[in-house]
Length: 224
Image (cartoon, rainbow, N blue to C red; front, side, top):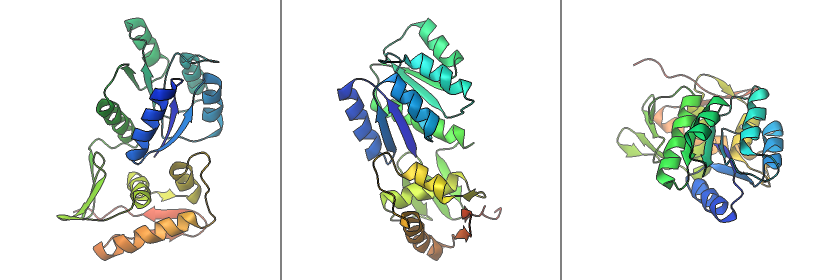
């Protein structure tokens, strides 16, 4: 999952970027409102963590312009502005959550997970798919009572496919969410990642279908 972090405090921005990447998120960072507005105009993200007191363009204005473009990307405001008026304005202008500084990293990550689940219509932290259970909190995969050993990239591919089970996921969609700015995406990088994941899933009866010219499909498992 790809997150745009908008934060002008260098120390906090670097700390958050590292922490979120360790939790398997792809993180792109901008430090001013103008750059944030440009990124949100031209790139695709699963979630935005947005400070309000930004140089160039205030975070509230970034949010208003984002919603004016009819974007539905979840936005979590993370700010030192803790007045009731600011919280109300942030929510009324279209943010999905509002967290004030100082904050606990565990709470921030929990709120991020909740917003991403909500975006995909998932209410539980545990996603079940046939014999497979994926825990969105600790990023673990179980088949029965056995852990399935997946690399960080394989886990990210699986999460994307699980959240869109029954729908075709294009290579472009995968690339947008697996790679951030400055990361090279080879011509066959997506195919290789899906192939490796497929080889680990097929022995437990789960198949990733290739839909020629369109992308990949994780069929909805049969009921029961």
